[in-house]
Image 1 (cartoon, rainbow, N blue to C red):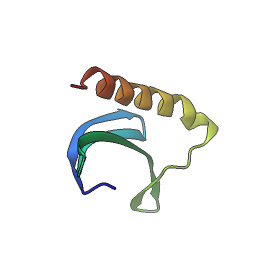
Image 2 (image 1 turned 135 degrees about the vertical axis):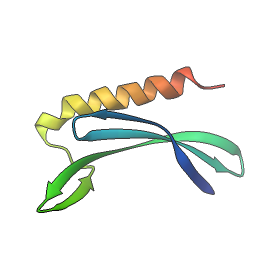
Image 3 (image 1 turned 90 degrees about the vertical axis):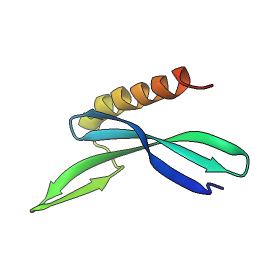
Image 4 (image 1 turned 90 degrees about the horizontal axis):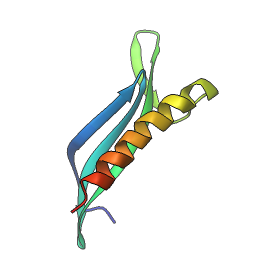
Length: 76
């Protein structure tokens, strides 16, 4: 159970695909999580989804790999 989800530690972007690394804490201590999203515009409004098309997959791999590298290399 996550007690607190703080500010983003780092964001990675490839086009409209974003991965964000977060600092979190619970009763056992601090840990990091990664969220990802695809941004798109519907009319005049920006929206986000985590549903990807085949053309989004390479960019998702890039940003998630960068997020993994960041978390793995910065562990205590």
